[in-house]
Length: 488
Ligand code: ADP
Image (cartoon, rainbow, N blue to C red; front, side):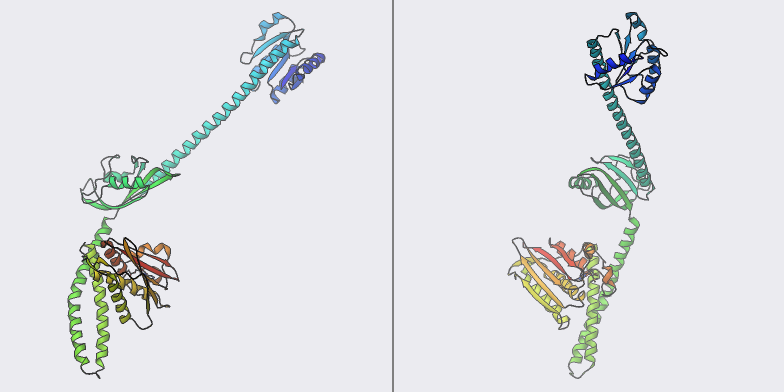
């Protein structure tokens, strides 16, 4: 909008008409005072100012405009009576655009100047606006940076307070932060702690995980700088994602050395105890078998019944101790597998027969699937042990339903054997854990007896056959445990 300032109404009228005919928006003021009030309130792109006015003359008005930030940059075209006045025009008004037109006004010249100033001012305003928005953005970014910095500081403070060694890495794996615990195991921020020569290489394992974009979890011994002692730590490194790519990594070493020592002592105790128990138990079993045979010679002997029951309890005790011995063999890497080519179907049938003989008539085991008439390399005794374990569990954990199905499936590379029951089932999130040593599902552990080692031994036996083991299960509906063995 353009402001015309003139004390003469006629002049205002004719100028207004002229400008409006060229589509300019126009406002008017009849004195310098009024012009100042209006200019402070509204936004004008240009002011056309008569020099000779009663009260404040044009120069004084221009000087006042120069004193306010809002008005100081508005361009002014003075209307002056004579050419000589032009030397006063720049007085006190240096920053804004300025020009003059002498009276009587030549409309064409005036319009030309108005257009030039008007466009200039519009451009100026647009530039100022974009500068303002740029400044706002810069300020916003600066504030965001400050917030981020304080969040990082907070995060580092938290890592510092941890009892573990904690560190962060950038996307390429370079160390960006370590807490003070780090220096108990490393001489420099840039160097990872030294791992025991018999353990995995931290950097190689990390590189593998970085390529697969997966977290790393590793039990590893690292060397304490002061004592020189290697202590077991659980190393965890988790990627922090930004969309699909990794932004950085957060890692911890947790000292598990004491826990490891206790575990080792417990394993040693189990190993010794089960060995020592096994010898007298084998003698007891042999003497009881002799006694049973002797008593059986006389049909009417009631004691034979008692001895049979005692023998079956001795048998249970024997199998518990055998399992414990197996666990200690696994722990010491001494569980031996004797693979020979043999018929798997015979082993499956033997296992089913054993279960039927040792359980009451209510148990029903049906055989489904393709019966594999092939010979494969496997340890018959150990695979039978796995099957008996699956079948015993299927019956034990199905108190309301005695139906069990054994299914086999063969393809070009492997044979798969599964045992399905319709029992209590296992919750989703506990299914992986059932193959761990001494793990028992909490919900059922009180109702059913057991030590939680059967499936651990099974998984080790199958692992040594280069096979796979697993399960699918639905709570209250039942479970299917399976294993696969390679054909060659
Ligand atoms: P145990 O039966 O002696 O406890 P296992 O190692 O054989 O030990 O099994 C581990 C746990 O897995 C069991 O304690 C039980 O909670 C669960 N489990 C195993 N088999 C089944 C099954 N067929 N149905 C439901 N839960 C099962």
